[in-house]
Image (cartoon, rainbow, N blue to C red; front, side):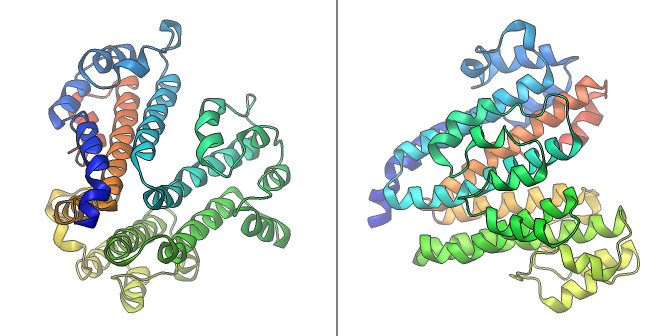
Length: 348
């Protein structure tokens, strides 16, 4: 009864927001459009993005501008949820926002290392980060070197792991990305027990542990297929947390000598029952399918819990990824069927 009272308001709010997420048939209609302005018109006429898209000047209907607005819609949804949350629920949202912080820092490292002519175009994120994050965008946008960027993170939890990396040896963009990702998952795994209790801790442990397992599967697959990395190098990029995939099975996956051996090992994991190998989905689509199943089952079984918040934010983020991918495909003139193949996965 306690959780029902605590979550009744936020669950009602999230259900109303979820009803506005795009349906599979809407993605089919989007895939049949011919250019980005047509996508914008469709979203304005048929979806919940009307209000936020109306803020864009007609002369700025470029994919990059649209993506910024879509990200702002995610931030607005986070803000709506935050306002309805209790102090305890807000602790979870502060834990959740670490992913947005890591994405922002990774983006800034790319800008600095690649010496883009117009380095930082992130001021649109400032109101959100000023309110909810430990990171100061005002400081980040002054960075012109990786050393400056690291120093501008002083006072945040990300400073120390990045400082140790910077001071140790010659560092690449890959090293910074990897350090941040490993830190993110390791800190999330440790801090969950400070923020959550009992059933909610159990739910988040299952969600977070499964996400780590699935990301390790992705990283092993990519390392072997695209980069031909040696086993020793693959082990160094994996999150050192094993939830449902034992170290012995990780070893079997990493040291598989061909795709058939890798898939044979993957069939031994707890996640293979949610993945139809005959569908020939990409490893990224398998990741999305498994998480979709996990989150929606958790929400169905525990509707008055963090599962409702976690599931909605996941579905919203997936929707934005698919919209961004669809616009990119349309921009390059892919056919509707090719666009849908790239979008893949689920919406609701």
